Length: 595
Image (cartoon, rainbow, N blue to C red; front, side, top):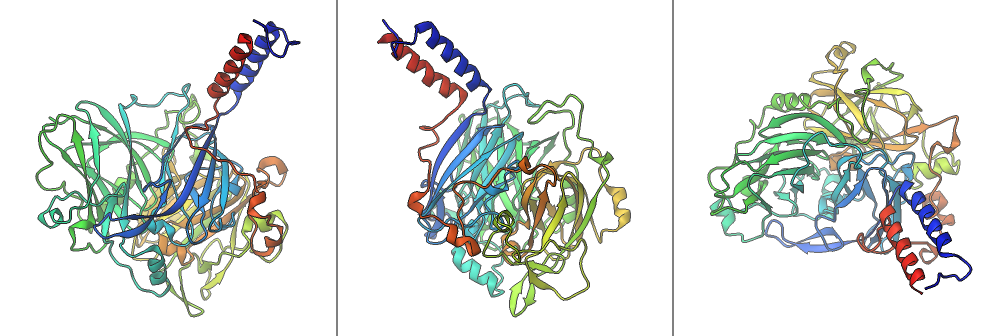
């Protein structure tokens, strides 16, 4: 045997291999995904309609990664309109370029592809992605994100026997384009036509449904085992109550935070929210059980399709699920839902992405530097068009994304003048941006002056939910704040005629979207961007990506799509980790030694 090349001794090759292996083991792995977004035909409620799928799947594939991995997702847009995907709850440390919203990215034109690249830095938990423009979320296009703990960081519960991602969503048989038109012309699209669970309609638990013959979802389990259910409300308008017949839901995590572990018989999950429950298969298993998601705080449709029902199937089952569906909370009882939300607390003794030897982040002891009271109001006509406002301003997305305008010092695209409190003036349409202080500590109070529950979401951050109550927020309301173990998350509900307060540490430089996640409200202008700039260290943010798409006033900079560098390959066939690199190097070594 001899080594190749001839001038390199075998011992040197081995030393080289070990040296590279050491470097590889120290690096954060890369994982590559190749996704095609296109229309599919489905009949989730018995009526054939167009939905948005990814790689032929509805819902789309699960992005399953581990803390600190680098994620590369090449997205091909096969829709007939521009597309952006946003990563709900992923913090994109120092990298708002990858956020996938109109304030930071030009949309991907039809027929084009664009490659997202970001690191899930210091994160764990359950999240999901979805299309952020053109009302497309109403047609699907969503999928799960799982960020696992690194092996060296223990999970604060026994590892479950299985992992289940479950999407619950309100659903309409109208196309997303028709719904978009309805919203623009003040046609209330009303109660949903049905509730889907992982893209399926309801199990035929009633005689009316039995005649439909459309498919329903089934989750297969083994008796005595415990499963982690990651449940996401990926709908567009409706709070849903989730429950499993005869089974408890042990809450363990929500949107990247481990929680105090408490059992619930049901959970209200608001638009855009994600929860992890441990569910133990502790029943006899002689029959199946209902998994249910039903509407809350809305005029329920008379159709039984308006309740989503899937089946929990024990391997030992001898018969179908039976009996009435498990009862939901009283429909009009918002106090129940608020008290349930207040009961969700942060597990301050558990490490998440990092060890936690010193206990919780003591947010209650930090001096607040900025206070915003943000009031949302019902839609109204402004300059002849239906709009919705935050603090009297309806956000107008400019043709040039804010982040690009900032990068190229283009004036007149936006103003750093979003008011800290509602102004005594007529509502207006404007591109007004919040000015955040880097490493400041911001208090934001959301006051809901509308008649429906709203979900607020902040990209780029997890914030502490410190208080909520009915009525108007005042300075005295701070006496109600939880300053010790308020849960940290990225989406919070605000009940009608009520307020919710959050605290957020602004350590992530970038241009970040703050929005109402209820799709009609978002589409009509209830969003704003939070500008966080590090005035001292220019390298605190990632530089502009080489594959940036240019639009608006920067359109002349756009290269032809054929000149762009793109990745391709399946998530399995292209998977670069330390182990993968080592195996490749080892294979090269063996081949060389064998020559």
